Amino acid sequence: MSEFESEGSIADPSALIASVFAACARLSEQLGRPISPDGHFVGGLGEVFARDELDLILTSPSVKSIDAHDAEGRSRRPREVRSL
Image (cartoon, rainbow, N blue to C red):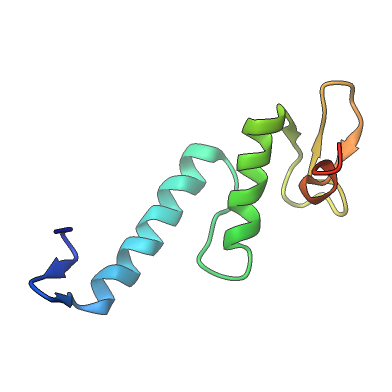
């Protein structure tokens, strides 16, 4: 049983929500990317996953239309590299 569950039920939802925000803050700090529990949550995690799996160098989050560069210096967006 996890720290958020009691016998047969889920504990206070506010505790679960607080843990999501805490996890996002830790991920942002450790990964150097903004990870927030909003519409960018999955995208931010996806960029970091693609960075690690495809050996990409992520650009600053404020760069428009380019998410990363590959080892050869080509601009990449993680959703594009799935076809490589």
